[in-house]
Length: 283
Image (cartoon, rainbow, N blue to C red):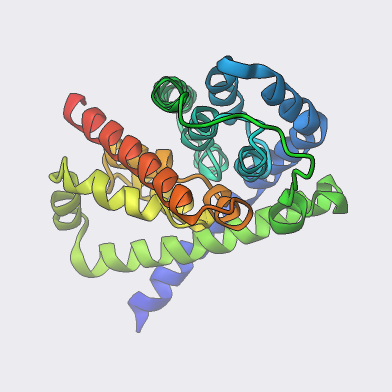
């Protein structure tokens, strides 16, 4: 049983080390959310055909529940489908706090964020061109924003919300790290890396499926696997591009057309996986 305690001890120590970095990061994110939330929505409403550009750029800014707010705005036809797709693709969910807490290279973080923004903007513009004649932009009077109720609890204050996020993500990291460490111990890092990293097509496909999970655990897992060297850059990007946080979950709740929602999820998945495959082949 010694190896069990060894794995638990290593996982616990590694998880505790990143708590201060997570807390500082989430405090900054909550501050940005409080300062920029309404301004961001206002900019999207006025963006018009430039919506995908604005949405793709704003999506990389760490804001609580931005994809959820975008889903509500799209359900009210305040923003275009292309803008919604751009936001979904560019939003980073829990990726940014994990990279910062793991002390990832700043250049790497910037490259990932720029890549997500660029892919989101390009895809959003193309989607709007294709669907412009099939979707009207009629503003509804009742646009619900359930970010605070479903995801952020922002009304409870910046510090409390940041602490709650930190605790939740630390638990996720502990569980995922524990699984990774156990697998590495029993299977071996070389064998596991050989199995995952040599799958330039299958890797992004599977990572994209993981990214569709409407929970921050998906982005935590993908980022952790990448930082451990067990997931290629293309696979990681595929999962993170598809991962729109709780955006899709909110979309299925507030947008009446289930068929349209499934099509949007399919578009998001195809763009994310294809982008991941291209990145995997090029790198």
